Length: 198
Ligand code: GDP
Image (cartoon, rainbow, N blue to C red):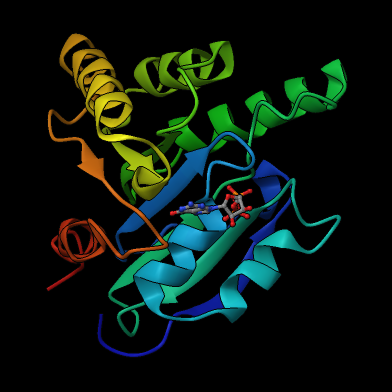
């Protein structure tokens, strides 16, 4: 990407969203602990980004980052499926996510992160359902590919590919990444860069 990745906006509710502009947006979402912060750091080569997203109290907000000098916006969505979260917090998350997804014409694609080590959880299926209902194009990105044995890795990839084939809103290409080894990072970067404004 041209230029640094710069945090520029946080929204805790739907009425706080930055105005829709011509700038395309790509959002990242996934279960908490899926490796989203690490992936953002690996994508941008900037360590400080994780701090923004991991600041306590900031976890339930949408964080907006300027990427590629105003040609693309990266939206970091709050992690879902946190076991300790109360029902009210979970409902809040769904509400914010759905409102955002449904009413955001500048949102080009959501990257739905899935952990290679963890099977698909009900919270992942709930997120897929929200994305489908909101008719937002999304793409699966597997994380932590380095952390599993080859057989488990292949099984997980096939499982997620099967999910992608079944969902009309899902992109058929599943990207396999590791923030540790850098596997898949150039491919993911290229997918994202292809959505930037000309
Ligand atoms: P987030 O909660 O989704 O932002 O997840 P983090 O990026 O904070 O990562 C959660 C945990 O997974 C941390 O302990 C990371 O060190 C670990 N992790 C993240 N990415 C990778 C990866 O690519 N490989 C391995 N082995 N561990 C990872």
